Length: 223
Ligand code: CA
Image (cartoon, helix red, strand yellow):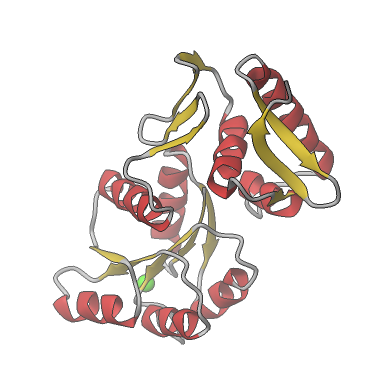
């Protein structure tokens, strides 16, 4: 899942990027509300973590503008310690949750997973498709009851396909989910990952269909 972290403090931002990446998220950073607004325009993120205290335009203004445009992206705001006012303002302008600094990474991860669960109207932290289950908390995949060994990128790819299901996931979106902005990832590389993943899923009767000119969709394998 791809997260945009909007935080001007470089030390905090890089710590968040490292911690959230280890927890299985793809993370991109924006250092200002202006940069974030630009990045959020194409809808390539599943979630945003917004620090309220930003240079120039602040986090609250950013969220207000997002919501005014009809953008329903799940947003968690980071507030100053003990600031009831920031917390209330954050929720009032349209944030879905908040966390006061300083916080433990484990709590942030749990809150982000809860937000994603709610935004996809799921009751638990598992993504399922026929016999396939991705347990997001444990980062474990299984197919018809047997544990499935996936690399980080295979996991990210499968997760993105399951979140998009039954819709087709565009190849461009898939590339963004896999790489973030800071790594070069070609369309050919995506095809290689898809092909490896197909190999691992085939025995369980699950296929990744290529929808020509658009992208991929997870599906039952043809009989
Ligand atoms: Ca700040």
